[in-house]
Length: 147
Image (tube, rainbow, N blue to C red):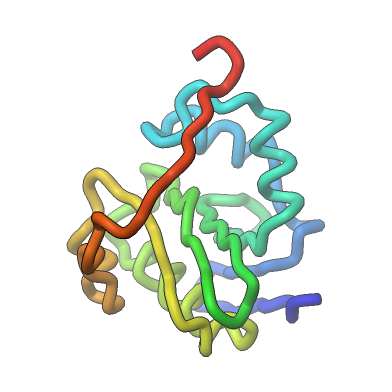
């Protein structure tokens, strides 16, 4: 069981309490995200139920998310990072990523992976680099129903 994290900065809060997640807001965020196009909502719910999810809030309003799939020792995959468009360019994305990487249950994870089309500069600030020896990595990708 992972530790529930709650941290505050000005009017904003980051929390890993799953009871606080607003799945309607999450569905709205991911409907706008290029990487989640075509993902059935029931798959999103299952994924979130089985991940460590960081919610970003202004008061009680959810304005961002980040999800981590991990064994909490060797491997972590950072995904579904999203900040509501009204709150971008205020450093909240950086704060969210920093909070993820500094979570007590994740701080010693050896290998982190993520995929991005357009946020390389953000993640490079936190030590992410292009994969070394990408030819060693493989994937198995199955389409969602209807794709």
